[in-house]
Image (cartoon, rainbow, N blue to C red; front, side, top):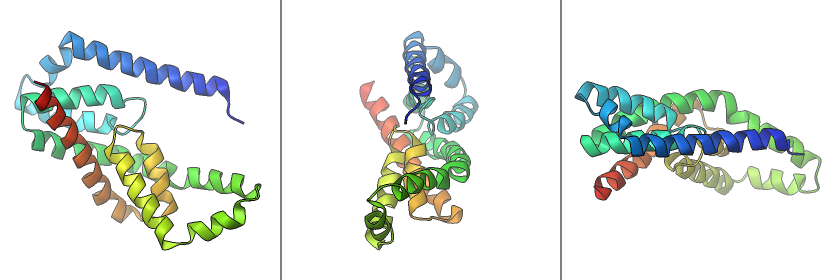
Length: 184
């Protein structure tokens, strides 16, 4: 049973995050702060990348990454932002990776679909699909927690996760930067 109070609180935080992102964009504050010097762009890219990983902070991070990319190099913004994203993702990966899959397993054990699910999860196709879909989620503005949990089904080691997280986040931030440059 889903705790509705907890769910409403999460939606409120997400709505507040989106409202803050809109206010920051309209005020021009982000642009002024993050693009004043090249050094601030690098630091801003890294921290915005870290915040790009969580559903609660994705919207303001997208605004910041877009502003930084507009005033500088899209490739540099994506490269440094992806480093920050990897740090955020590794923290999530180490804490969430197995938790969601364990909770799902507990629920499935209690249902009739347990046997079918166990057969499915052991297939190579399922592991590759969960890896690929998880990677696409990490590259997108969707919450990385979901993508990381999907990658947890593939039992991926941290040594493999780090470069893959970097690559997927780089692509996602690069697309954000290219979209921001195209809108100018």
